[in-house]
Image (cartoon, rainbow over all chains, first blue to last red; front, top):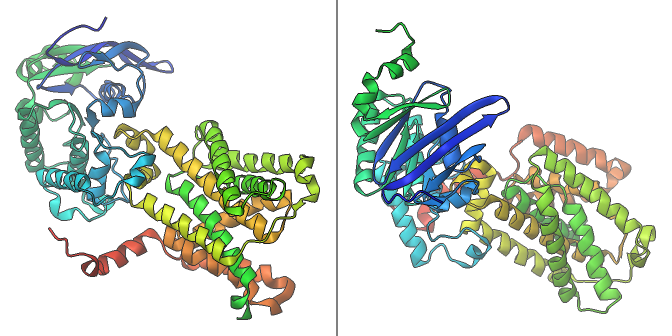
Length: 258
Length: 284
C-alpha cells in the first residue's frame, strides 16, 4: 500500500542501487514535502546523482520503491515519469546542441502536447502552437535568454547553457523539479540569480529537489537538507542543523577536523 | 551532356532520390540503419507480384506494398532498435543479406532468375511520387515529430527524460523509412521491367549511404547530391571502363574538400539567417 501522506510530493522507501559489486545507494529513505525546496548534499560519490537518476527513471532501483504524489513510479520508463511531472537538469550539461535555444525549450514541453505520428497533421502556426511558443519565450525571459532564442544551444557560453537547461526543464510545468548542481561553474553573482529564480518557482507551488555543493546556496533556498555519504543517508534537518552536525563535517572534512 | 536528355538517367535520379530520402528518415532520428536495400527489394517484389500476377493498378500496388513493408519494418524495428550506432548498421547489413537470399529461394517470384513482366511506369508518375515523398519529409521536419526525432538524434537519453517516448519514435522512423524504400523499390521494378535478387544487396545500401553523406545529410543535400552522383558517371562515356575510377576519384576529392557534404545543416541555417528578413518580419 502506498503510504498516504497528503503533504509528500516524493517518497523514497529504502531505495538501493547496485552497480556490479558497488552499492551506490543503500536503503535511502527520503520524504520531500509539497512546495518545499529540499537539498541533497554529500561528498563526491555519495550517490546523489544516482538517486536523481532513479527518481527520473533512467534506471530502476535494485531495491525499494519511489512514490510520486502517492503513486508508485518504481520501474516506470523515464518518459512516463517525465509526463507525470518530473523534470530535471543534468550535472554535466546535456542540451540538444544543434537545435536553437527556443527549439530546446519547445521540445521540453510535454503537458498536453504530442510529439507522435499524428503531430504531422498539426500546423506549427496554429493558435495552440503560438501559445506554446509564447510560453517558451516567457521561460527564456525568466532565465534571461529571450534575446538569444535563435542561437544554437551549443554556441551559448557555459552559464547561459546552464540557464537554458533550467528553462527546458521548466517547459513541462513540472510538479517536481530536480536540479543537479545547477550552479556549478557559475560565479557567485550568477548562482545568486539562480537562487532567486528557484525561490520564485517555489512561491508558484513547484516542489524542488537540489543537489548542491555550495552551502551558501543551500542555506539561501533550502527548507530541508538530506546528507548522503557512501550511499547512505547520514543526516537530515534544516540547513543550519546540518552544517553544525559533527558527522556531516566528518564526512566532508575527515575525523580530525575540529 | 547528351546524358541530360536521356529519360532513363532521370528515372534513376528519381528512384535514387526516393531511396536516399528513406535512409535520411532513419538518420534524422539518429538511427544508422543500412536496411534500405532489404525494404526496397521487398517493395519491388511485392508490387511486381501485385501488378503482374494479380493485375492490380500500379499506384494501388505501390501503396499496398508500402503498407506491408512498413508493417515488416515495424516488426523488425523492435529487435533492431535495441542496437545503437555501428551495431545497428551491422545488424541491418545482416537483414539485407537475409532478404536477398530469401528472394533467391522463392521460386514463385523467379528465384535467382529474377522476375519480369512489369508494365512500364512513366517519368511524370515517378516524379509525382518523388514530390509526394519530399512533401512528407518536409512536413516531418516542420512538425513536433521532427523536433522529437532531432532531439533523439542529438541525445537519446535526454530526449527520453524530457518525456519523449523514444522507442515509439524510433519505430515510427523505421516504419516510415521502410515504406518509402518500398515505394522506391516498386518504381524501380516497374521502370526496369526486370528485377533479380542481386539488385537488392548491401552494395545498394552503401551506394545510397554515399548519396546521403555526399549531399550533407539534409533534405536539400539529398536533392543536390543525388542528381550529381547519379549523372556524373554517365556524363563521361568516353572514359569507358574507367568511369568508376573517375567516380571514386570524385568521391575522394569531395570528402577532402567538403567533408560536411554539399548542403550541410549549418549552411542552410546561415542562408536562412541571411534572408530571414525577406521571409518574415517577426522580431522580438
